[in-house]
Image 1 (tube, rainbow, N blue to C red):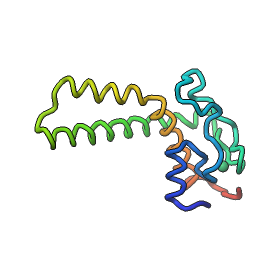
Image 2: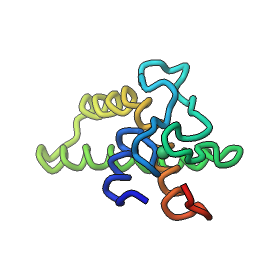
Image 3: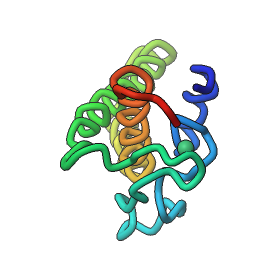
Image 4: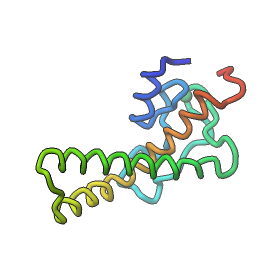
Length: 127
Ligand SMILES: [Zn+2]
């Protein structure tokens, strides 16, 4: 098993959390929204199962919510700390940043969910 920090970097680069080499998604381009959720069944490099069970990535929805809420509170917190106030147009700017980053948040949430499974839940790690 690869070190924790390497695996975390692999998650941020949308790579396999088991080997950090194979792509998690068949189409790496984030602008191709039609293929946003298309993933291979197994890792092309190490054979890690990406389709663990039906509806496995349902839990990634909660990761996505936590991630986006954390980013928004972090950005708005920094803004309020520096300027003392959050203006309405700044709020719309931050919401726009979150909306534009949607493809990445969607995919990285799936990667984090799979990372949690591979790291702590997966019963036999004989890859
Ligand atoms: Zn792999």
